[in-house]
Length: 269
Ligand SMILES: Nc1ncnc2c1ncn2[C@@H]1O[C@H](COP(=O)(O)OP(=O)(O)OP(=O)(O)O)[C@@H](O)[C@H]1O
Image (tube, rainbow, N blue to C red; front, top):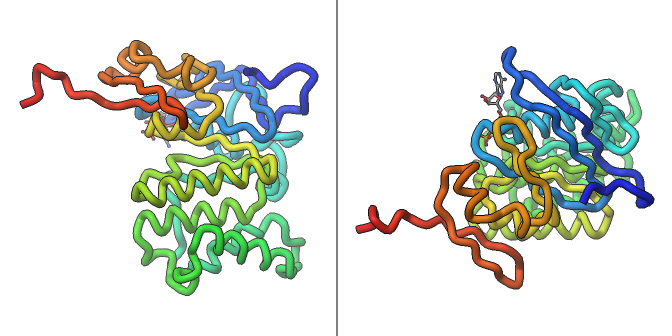
């Protein structure tokens, strides 16, 4: 599962990566090699370091060890170069006042526009295509600050996709979405992944979605990778009990592994 060997160059390489937040070490010795076109679901309890790892990969948080996205070192390369290679859909997007949905999505093209240049026909075509695929047409003239949480989440994903990155980092991409939009968004990302060899690394709390969309799961616990493999290898009843302190049943379905939370039968009415 490492993606090493004689295949294509990895899309993502982390070797012995560590990171501190507020003076505390929150990532320890993370090794991760991801081939182009893979979907890696990053799972783990609250505070286990998922967002920190995504921010390290996006070059937003300094780290020790080696980090490469394609041939770019995100913490060291110029921001524009990094932003043409890797896009982050943040968990808590910050939206400036007075910016419309269309303007926000168009901001995704900024790293591709020459300094002092303006948008080309191609930039506008890409923005329109993303808006159409996420069915955002009716929202384009609205102010982004006035959207619902789920609407904003889809707009922020559109901005990241308009960036045309090689690697897309998603931080809880469906946390504010209803069940229909969850499926729509995850299917869309998956089809863009297969169409354009996009590499996806998605932090997800929903273990069923993580297993059904990810061909590989990386489980973090207290800043360390404690399991890395197929959903079937990583998601076991015992491991979920140990890492999350949760009681679950595992269901194997044609679409993949499903994780069903169960109430303690002694406490149920
Ligand atoms: N800016 C910060 N300053 C200080 N500590 C931080 C900061 N950001 C994160 N941390 C701490 O780093 C640790 C890892 O946080 P992180 O957000 O990466 O976890 P997570 O797995 O994404 O959590 P969640 O599932 O709750 O979103 C936590 O203990 C968190 O409190």
